[in-house]
Image 1: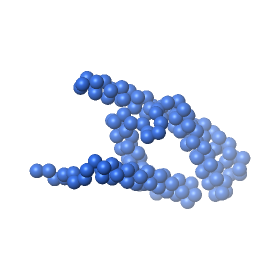
Image 2 (image 1 turned 135 degrees about the vertical axis):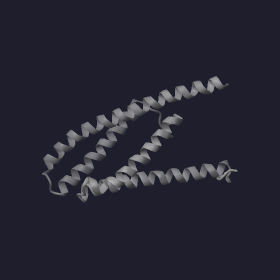
Image 3 (image 1 turned 90 degrees about the vertical axis):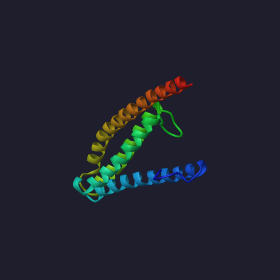
Image 4 (image 1 turned 180 degrees about the vertical axis):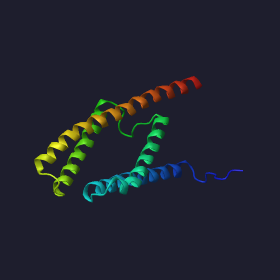
Length: 155
């Protein structure tokens, strides 16, 4: 006896997945924005945003494991140097804007000091994001090769 049986056809299942995908991105970006606002602009300590951070990391980790298992990277891009550099650059740029504005308007430092910290941190963030996306891209490329070999062997 099946506890849960599928009562939708393939078209409805595809539409459900599209809705769930949109909801997933809303949750992930919403949690990210909430963490940023609480950490930078409200001055909350790590203990106050730990719950949101854990939920965000579990959700993103779950998605990444699923993407790696299926050998999927993205709808529009394939893993490559252009994507790695672009992701690192955009992440570093967003960090620079948010952290500089937060530190300056919360009157922690003067503008020159804020920009100096932002420059140093943005270089670190760029290379960290670049290396992480390159690692995931390499793993996904290897997984694609393994899945292709598995499907060729099955034929």
